[in-house]
Length: 69
Image 1 (cartoon, helix red, strand yellow):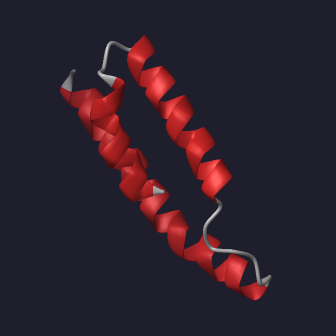
Image 2 (cartoon, rainbow, N blue to C red):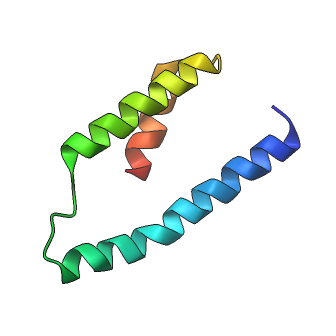
């Protein structure tokens, strides 16, 4: 993976973490559940499929995505 690819990944991770506060505030205001287990399963499943397509061992990214969700 090139340095540009790694920088892009970190930028996207930071962006995702930044939005977490806003999403949590929105859910609290609307009295929505913080966790959506089914949505998290779909995201993880899609991430693992994409990883496999890119030549990355799917099980290696599972814990990483679980922490982000």
